[in-house]
Image 1 (cartoon, rainbow, N blue to C red):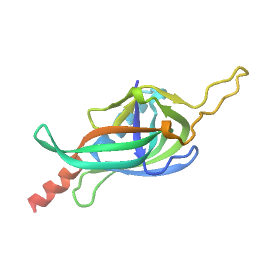
Image 2: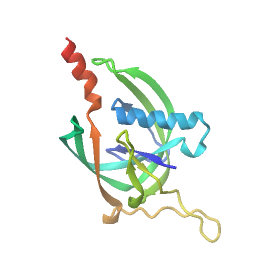
Image 3: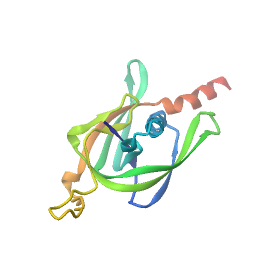
Image 4: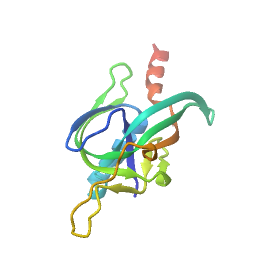
Length: 176
């Protein structure tokens, strides 16, 4: 049971609505995976996690003879679950490639267990063990997550992703 993780430059706050303009194949696949879970009625998987990415460094590398990217990503362990409110399919003006505009709303905070991170075959991060919301204390009252900004709240993650989002533009330029 994996929770997809989307990286944002600024934190998603609980109750706030944000718009995402997605066109990279890994994010399109992530959204497709989330919407397919919604259609199957899996209430646990109707959301995805958003983590604040404090730094990304990309460089070109060869992956199985194809051009790819090496990405060194630094993000905060603390994140916010995002519920998809609205999804609009579209196409990119130059390449004609697929894009989606997704409106999300921040839900419960969570913490990522750094030992439970993986990379999907499509190139997005997934976490198999996150602590969502707060725990109940002895009186049944909900306790909030202890999410101070400190050194333990940062993970260095290495992710290798493809440059597939550029292929449509390159193909179109070659054909003209």
